[in-house]
Image 1 (cartoon, rainbow, N blue to C red):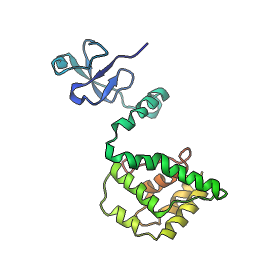
Image 2 (spheres, rainbow, N blue to C red):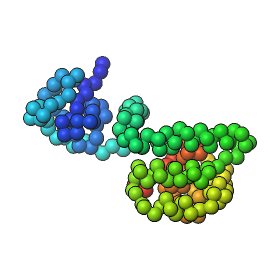
Image 3 (cartoon, helix red, strand yellow):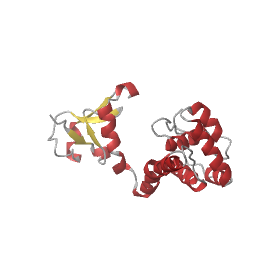
Image 4 (cartoon, one colour):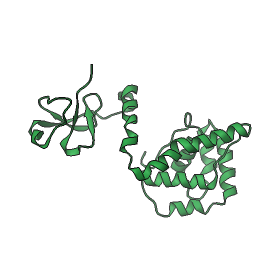
Length: 193
């Protein structure tokens, strides 16, 4: 059985279903056809309801996977290359180095700069952060990432090996670790407090 899906006229680019809803959403008070989106003339059919807060325990795996599948369409085109590098290219590069070097792997300076740029474009922009990271010598970046990646899966031991780098705080360090071990090291952004 398929779940009816409606497009809210206030945010027509978002499709909402009755199974996966944000905290506050507009629902029709009567059900229009699930195949036709709501129109401005049907706004009188809307009411506002408040949903309980979404917590990790309240989100089902199928709902999470379905929402995650929408991510590529929601990302502005100018960020596609950075997302490809962050989620595909750089993790594959690190894994290939690991395979070719008996488990030893690292990130190069240009790769770290690309990850910092990704982070800045997806979160809080800090104009001087990229310059601070760029001020680190390439050898120091490679040595620090090599040592941190060797400490994995112990993220508590790996994080402090990256934070002495200029411009690399705990959130950025977690991003570098997540690229090296996506299945073991979570990325936490500055906005996660």
